Length: 141
Image 1 (cartoon, rainbow, N blue to C red):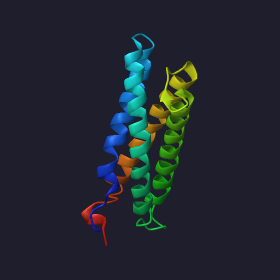
Image 2 (tube, helix red, strand yellow):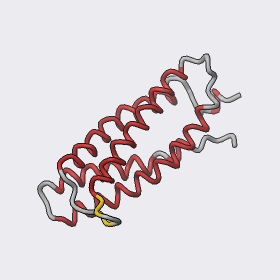
Image 3 (tube, rainbow, N blue to C red):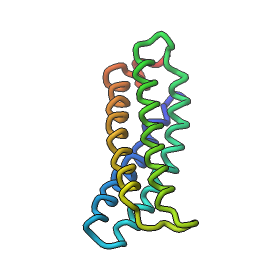
């Protein structure tokens, strides 16, 4: 496929994980319903992020190994995997069997850490496109 799939898949998990983190923070001051919505968004975000990561791995294989973009792409990949891991830990910490429970402070801290790393990794993803032209028509073979 000539059109990269990764860029169109990343928006949904980024949005849901961002909103999940906001919901986690808001749950400190609001009722249980907010944390339930945050938990559902977290489930959706962690699952859809897996799809985006698979597509990202396919796009990674298209970058020339000698390109300076490869170093940035590897940093982007590692940060996004770390972010996903923080969110996955947050999700597992709030599970009560197969049910989503109230997040504790550690689960919320993992969510906030996931968001911070997500933002840094996302910035590097933007750098790949806008500085190095990865995935753009002018940069394709």
